[in-house]
Image (cartoon, rainbow, N blue to C red):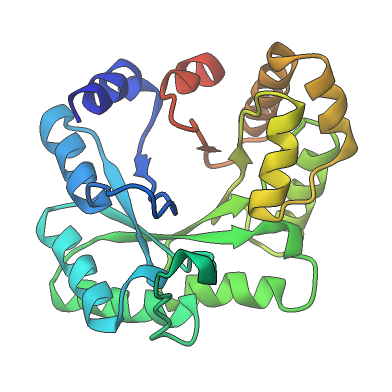
Length: 252
């Protein structure tokens, strides 16, 4: 935790909000994301949002976790559905809610009853936004109480994917409610692994950048940040991938 706080301290001037992500890896015990976000807020005075995953808790546990985050004075919380654990992991997938929108709605109710102004964040699959039900699902999460949606898969380049994602958001009136994702890839194998792990369909142009090396991939990510600023988008959802120093590299 001391190392975690030190790393965040070095880049706190580059972010309005730090997202404390959960990790789906049954090999490790982890500190609660709520506790980790609270430590960041207490020690650094930064805004930090824990990720609370519906998959990992039954309904009373989930809502109690939301209430705990509120009680700790965390102004933002991200709620995620979470991919299922494989059967071989011998871990239970809790599904006490019919959808993420329902979980968001009940969490929002808890927040109102507690008299808090907690903001709720939620994910959105931007690749499926133009397809059947994509916009309905996204707007359903906003209607249920989400204040902001964080996009996946990432916007990988400043031309093809940026234009596509930006157009889809504008056409559906979601530009102010969705933060596009900048995700710094490392190499060709990293691109393949992310596609396999997350089910992303990434453009072929990304492989050309990957073949040119990590620096080329970082420049591609930085160019997306530049376009977001030029087009006056409300912000960027930057994945540091465990290295907060990436924030300084891409945002300075």
